[in-house]
Image 1 (cartoon, rainbow, N blue to C red):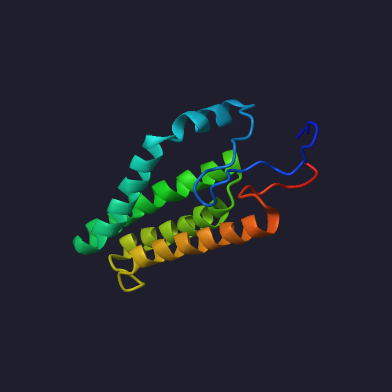
Image 2: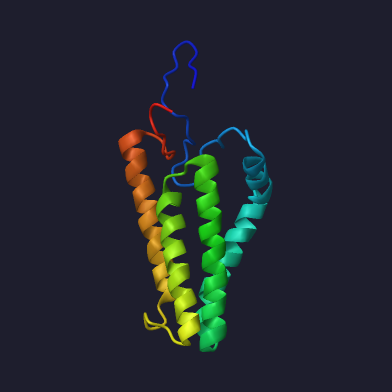
Length: 155
Protein backbone atom coordinates (compact mmCIF):
# COMPACT_ATOMS: atom_id res chain seq x y z
CA UNK A 1 0.00 0.00 0.00
CA UNK A 2 1.44 3.36 -0.93
CA UNK A 3 0.95 6.63 0.83
CA UNK A 4 0.81 10.16 -0.45
CA UNK A 5 1.66 13.29 1.50
CA UNK A 6 -0.11 13.32 4.84
CA UNK A 7 -1.44 9.77 4.43
CA UNK A 8 -0.64 6.74 6.54
CA UNK A 9 -0.28 3.11 5.62
CA UNK A 10 -3.40 2.32 7.64
CA UNK A 11 -5.85 0.26 5.55
CA UNK A 12 -8.73 2.31 4.20
CA UNK A 13 -12.22 1.33 5.17
CA UNK A 14 -15.72 2.71 5.00
CA UNK A 15 -16.57 5.45 7.48
CA UNK A 16 -19.91 3.69 8.03
CA UNK A 17 -19.20 0.85 10.49
CA UNK A 18 -20.68 -2.58 9.81
CA UNK A 19 -22.33 -1.46 6.58
CA UNK A 20 -19.79 -1.16 3.81
CA UNK A 21 -17.13 -3.60 2.77
CA UNK A 22 -13.52 -2.55 2.47
CA UNK A 23 -12.34 -2.21 -1.12
CA UNK A 24 -11.79 -5.51 -2.88
CA UNK A 25 -8.26 -6.77 -3.31
CA UNK A 26 -6.83 -6.65 -6.85
CA UNK A 27 -8.45 -9.17 -9.18
CA UNK A 28 -5.12 -10.62 -10.28
CA UNK A 29 -6.35 -14.11 -11.11
CA UNK A 30 -9.16 -15.71 -13.06
CA UNK A 31 -10.70 -17.06 -9.82
CA UNK A 32 -10.77 -13.59 -8.26
CA UNK A 33 -12.36 -12.09 -11.37
CA UNK A 34 -14.99 -14.85 -11.31
CA UNK A 35 -15.69 -14.21 -7.62
CA UNK A 36 -16.10 -10.51 -8.32
CA UNK A 37 -18.53 -11.28 -11.14
CA UNK A 38 -20.59 -13.68 -9.01
CA UNK A 39 -20.89 -11.60 -5.81
CA UNK A 40 -23.84 -9.24 -6.24
CA UNK A 41 -23.27 -5.58 -5.52
CA UNK A 42 -25.58 -2.65 -4.80
CA UNK A 43 -29.27 -3.57 -4.82
CA UNK A 44 -28.43 -7.15 -5.81
CA UNK A 45 -26.72 -7.84 -2.51
CA UNK A 46 -29.74 -6.57 -0.56
CA UNK A 47 -32.03 -8.85 -2.59
CA UNK A 48 -29.68 -11.74 -1.77
CA UNK A 49 -29.68 -10.88 1.96
CA UNK A 50 -33.48 -10.51 1.95
CA UNK A 51 -33.84 -13.92 0.30
CA UNK A 52 -31.62 -15.56 2.91
CA UNK A 53 -33.49 -13.80 5.74
CA UNK A 54 -36.85 -14.84 4.30
CA UNK A 55 -35.74 -18.46 3.95
CA UNK A 56 -34.40 -18.62 7.51
CA UNK A 57 -37.63 -16.99 8.77
CA UNK A 58 -40.01 -19.27 6.85
CA UNK A 59 -38.18 -22.60 7.40
CA UNK A 60 -39.48 -23.25 10.96
CA UNK A 61 -43.07 -23.10 9.71
CA UNK A 62 -42.57 -25.82 7.10
CA UNK A 63 -42.73 -29.56 7.74
CA UNK A 64 -39.48 -30.91 9.19
CA UNK A 65 -37.56 -32.09 6.12
CA UNK A 66 -38.54 -29.22 3.79
CA UNK A 67 -37.79 -26.76 6.61
CA UNK A 68 -34.36 -28.27 7.24
CA UNK A 69 -33.68 -28.30 3.49
CA UNK A 70 -34.61 -24.61 3.19
CA UNK A 71 -32.45 -23.78 6.21
CA UNK A 72 -29.57 -25.68 4.62
CA UNK A 73 -29.90 -23.85 1.29
CA UNK A 74 -30.04 -20.45 3.02
CA UNK A 75 -27.12 -21.27 5.32
CA UNK A 76 -24.94 -22.57 2.48
CA UNK A 77 -25.72 -19.46 0.41
CA UNK A 78 -24.85 -17.12 3.30
CA UNK A 79 -21.70 -19.08 4.21
CA UNK A 80 -20.49 -19.12 0.61
CA UNK A 81 -21.10 -15.37 0.30
CA UNK A 82 -19.08 -14.62 3.42
CA UNK A 83 -16.20 -16.97 2.67
CA UNK A 84 -15.81 -15.53 -0.85
CA UNK A 85 -16.33 -11.98 0.41
CA UNK A 86 -13.62 -12.47 3.04
CA UNK A 87 -11.25 -13.77 0.38
CA UNK A 88 -11.93 -10.74 -1.81
CA UNK A 89 -12.41 -7.95 0.77
CA UNK A 90 -11.03 -9.22 4.11
CA UNK A 91 -14.18 -8.02 5.88
CA UNK A 92 -13.77 -8.95 9.55
CA UNK A 93 -17.23 -10.32 10.28
CA UNK A 94 -16.95 -12.73 7.34
CA UNK A 95 -14.37 -14.82 9.20
CA UNK A 96 -16.88 -15.60 11.94
CA UNK A 97 -20.04 -15.73 9.84
CA UNK A 98 -18.49 -17.60 6.90
CA UNK A 99 -16.97 -20.38 8.95
CA UNK A 100 -19.75 -20.35 11.59
CA UNK A 101 -22.42 -20.78 8.95
CA UNK A 102 -20.34 -23.46 7.24
CA UNK A 103 -20.36 -25.41 10.51
CA UNK A 104 -24.11 -24.82 10.88
CA UNK A 105 -24.65 -26.05 7.31
CA UNK A 106 -22.79 -29.28 8.14
CA UNK A 107 -25.04 -29.72 11.19
CA UNK A 108 -28.15 -29.06 9.08
CA UNK A 109 -26.99 -31.60 6.50
CA UNK A 110 -26.57 -34.20 9.25
CA UNK A 111 -30.01 -33.30 10.63
CA UNK A 112 -31.54 -33.66 7.18
CA UNK A 113 -29.93 -37.10 6.82
CA UNK A 114 -31.19 -38.11 10.28
CA UNK A 115 -34.64 -36.70 9.59
CA UNK A 116 -34.70 -34.70 12.82
CA UNK A 117 -33.35 -31.55 14.36
CA UNK A 118 -30.72 -32.14 17.02
CA UNK A 119 -31.02 -28.55 18.28
CA UNK A 120 -34.80 -28.59 18.85
CA UNK A 121 -35.63 -26.72 15.64
CA UNK A 122 -33.50 -23.73 16.61
CA UNK A 123 -31.47 -23.58 13.38
CA UNK A 124 -32.77 -20.07 12.66
CA UNK A 125 -31.77 -18.89 16.13
CA UNK A 126 -28.32 -20.44 15.63
CA UNK A 127 -28.04 -18.65 12.28
CA UNK A 128 -28.86 -15.28 13.88
CA UNK A 129 -26.55 -15.98 16.86
CA UNK A 130 -23.66 -16.54 14.44
CA UNK A 131 -24.53 -13.27 12.68
CA UNK A 132 -24.59 -11.38 15.99
CA UNK A 133 -21.25 -12.89 17.03
CA UNK A 134 -19.77 -11.97 13.64
CA UNK A 135 -20.95 -8.36 13.86
CA UNK A 136 -19.68 -8.08 17.45
CA UNK A 137 -16.29 -9.39 16.29
CA UNK A 138 -16.21 -6.84 13.47
CA UNK A 139 -17.15 -4.00 15.84
CA UNK A 140 -14.35 -5.02 18.22
CA UNK A 141 -11.93 -5.34 15.30
CA UNK A 142 -12.84 -1.85 14.07
CA UNK A 143 -12.37 -0.35 17.54
CA UNK A 144 -8.97 -2.05 17.92
CA UNK A 145 -7.64 -1.55 14.37
CA UNK A 146 -9.61 1.41 12.96
CA UNK A 147 -10.85 -0.62 9.99
CA UNK A 148 -13.27 -3.44 9.31
CA UNK A 149 -10.68 -5.10 7.06
CA UNK A 150 -8.44 -7.84 8.43
CA UNK A 151 -5.00 -7.04 7.12
CA UNK A 152 -2.04 -9.31 7.61
CA UNK A 153 1.02 -7.16 8.11
CA UNK A 154 4.10 -7.91 6.05
CA UNK A 155 2.20 -9.06 2.98
